[in-house]
Every structure is written in C-alpha cells, then in structure tokens.
Length: 176
Image (cartoon, rainbow, N blue to C red; front, top):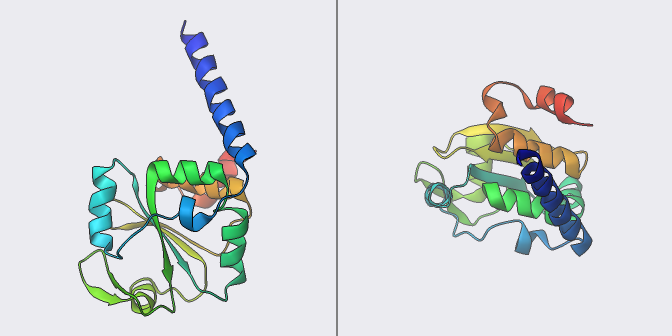
C-alpha cells in the first residue's frame, strides 16, 4: 500500500513538472516576483503568515547582462516559478534605484542605499535569502549556471541545509 502511494506521488509530481515545462517561459515579473510596496519588515510577516520559509531578494541593475540572463533563462521557467512561489516571497531591488524601501529593521531608505550600505552589493545579480527573522541565511553573487542550480539553491534554503553545510558541498552532493 505504501509503495503504491509513493509511486502515485512520484507520478503526480512528474506529470506536474511536465505540464509546467510544456507551458514554456513566462514573464518573471508576473509569475516569479511578488508585488510589494517595499516594506520588507512587513513582507517577513506576510511570509510567516503564508507559511513560507523566508524572503528572497534579487539585487539587480538595468545594464547587468547576468541579471538579464537569469530573467530570460531561469526566473522565467514555470517549474522555478512554482517551486519558489511555494516556499518564498521574492522581490527585485534595483541597486541604483531611488525608490524608498523599508528594511527588515523598519528603517526607510533608497533602494541603492539598502543594497550598498546594508548588504555591500557591488556586482549583480546578488540573490539573497532571508529567514523569517530577517537574517540573511544565504547569498549568491552572479548568475547560476542553469535552472537546476537555481532550484538546488531554493531547496538548500527551504529545507534549511544552510544550517549544517555550505551550498557548494550541498550542490556537489545533490547534482546528477
């Protein structure tokens, strides 16, 4: 009986993945990133209320070819969008932006000050994950090599592997 249930779950997962893959690429600003008023202290509360594992911030800038690559090759993939939407709230932050945001401590500042002064973002993209207390638990600078690596990064944080190992080791142990 248990084996049948497990097999059915695997079949359902495979079918869901195939359906998502068949949909083709979708706009990351519509299907990946969540809408926000830029109050990240409030977003942490929303993530907690919705049973998410945390918040992911994608620090970017307009002229960044690696940011564009991530949006055109990874963040636009339905399976990535589904997995990340299930586990995180995700927001883009323009590291050159003047839009006012509220940080995890409730302080208001321009996006560029938030990015540079608080997180020393100099190169983009920076993919930063925060737990439900607003603590950064993982930071990745640059693009990922592919969809699989980005999905592993999400698992690394969502399943809290960051508490016991580094992403490089986790990736080595879990990649085919």
